[in-house]
View 1 (cartoon, chains in turn orange, yellow):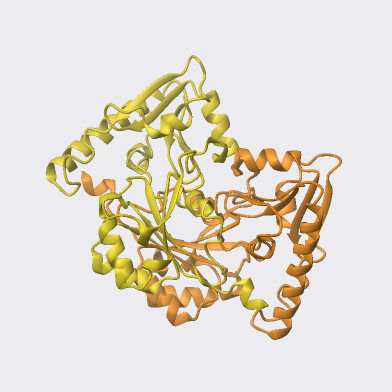
View 2 (cartoon, rainbow over the protein chains, first blue to last red):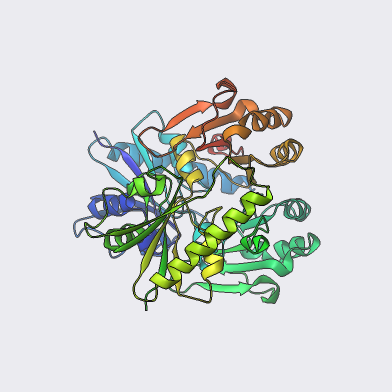
Length: 243
Length: 243
């Protein structure tokens, strides 16, 4: 009897995954990962130089990505079937041996694995290996402490209504905005309303070789990278204030 | 000419540090770490089985911990001298060779290293290795996805005024409260005001062998562990709602 092991991969640099995830992935005989149809897959790409020669791969291809709105009934139904089928497949595989499922960032922090986790619980042994969240790789790319002293930090999704975004942005010290992509113009407007736009950074592919860092106010509105995170540093008790 | 390398250690389990921090610590000839006076030090304890035989250690002992209030002038002056002296020592050491500085959790996320980082910048090469924040190790201990869909997540310090805490707690979906310790009774009252107390967990030493998990509402008011984090899970779009 095996188990399903979800190995968090961290922000993208293979050297930033945990010692434990690194070992589990190098030893994996059965390896599953999410990917968009017709793509190699970002998770698979991170581990490409780590796999056994005799690894058996299970690409879990999303039935839809952005063709349908995530609020639509059609999207919902397709995704329910997709997760249910893969949960059943993983459960069956784990009857005989361990199966490793890759997950970018930390699996329990807005990760896709949660949809499988919920369906597998109580049916088969599941182990989740934590990892450095993508946002941590992004603020590390800015090479400045992100939160200090009593800073309040808030994480927001760019999919939220503009007014909600602006209100949360005004109340917190440090800000992380994920799921930006085509929501980025709205995120910019909300930051401007909250008076935080000039302190905001756009970080794309933090920790990866093609990492990009830019002041958000200086980016073009048509420049909406999908894997980017917006960051505003906290302004809590700082060492400069001690001098 | 060497550099100062701050190696993030993650939540406490040595297997959860990054492949890169693991290697840098095993190779370190000069190793500095913070600790309380008269203690072995939590950071040093995490790496105790990883060090070279000929490692040279530099324990950076805090001049005060809880004897003085952190807002007092005396505390401020002592800490300014402490950080200034150690920044000068590390800068001098890095003239000849690399010096590794240990930091629990992620160094840029409420980490003590920031006080040295600010003072070293522009004077000597500094490299910071990111790590899994302590809160990630804690929510992993609860074995349930922490944030989902469009959840708003807010990180709060238990040192904030009770009214501020309660207001932030009412507005966010997922909550992380750090620096609990003797602030825990106030944190509990604020959670109760915000209607979130019954959903709150207390996690002590997440990922470590003596890890402890308890429902916060069921803990005694005198039970205020220093290294504990309070967590409330988000309630965003969930897979159950898809069925």
